[in-house]
Length: 335
Image (cartoon, rainbow, N blue to C red; front, side, top):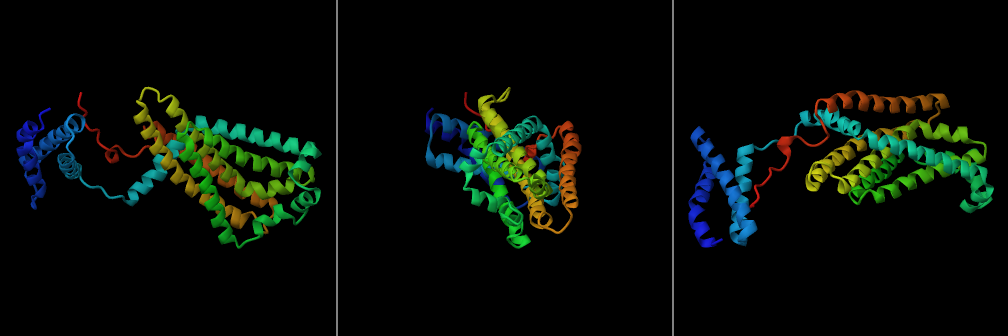
């Protein structure tokens, strides 16, 4: 490409586009059509220059010009409460529902592994001895021991905030690390399953499994579900790297990545509820059956939300991706 000839041939179009963008008054219909045409041509010119004859100063000018024109053509859109409502009534539940074939098997397998670890620890005193000294284990599992006082050792509000922060970090790790073929997600998930299995096993060996479940279930059902959803979504993102399906790998990762980000935001709210339950309900003086009932109700509400609202939104075409008008426009590429 002869850069000087190219610039001479198209400079008038670029200058005209810039003139239209500087107009303080509202453009007429003919001027608007002209602006759209010049925007499309300039986008193509920019693509040709980037691939054939890069010139930093010229590319900078055209990039700025195209960005300004695109903003004028598409119009600036501000986020509103309608977007928030759409997110919680369509995008988030639809994404969780669409990815259920990943997080439900993750939940079932993780629960089975935790139960197996718990049985192994409970049935083998030598395994218990490898975890800690006998006096330390007794201190942890005795009435009023560490497992029980853990939930009431701090003021409820600060404890709920701490729990929410820790769980949100684990969920974020699962989603962010999913792009690395999902392998780090398995490690984060195993750490959570191992901690659960150890607690179940030690309290079972002390004959206090009912006490442990009474402390775990009020908040743990919703909390663990959020972790399993995050792990499943992270694994799906990792599998997209391996098998993007009919889409290009770049497009598939962009779509699944945006959906995963939306899931992360939604799960932060779910974990806020779980943290509130752990901070205020779990250590409360309510009877065990009442505390567990609250946890079961919260879990059922979430599942009904996903399978009711989410299924309806998914069947209407919602995937959890952002709205099409908010995505980047595809730039024409030189052949």
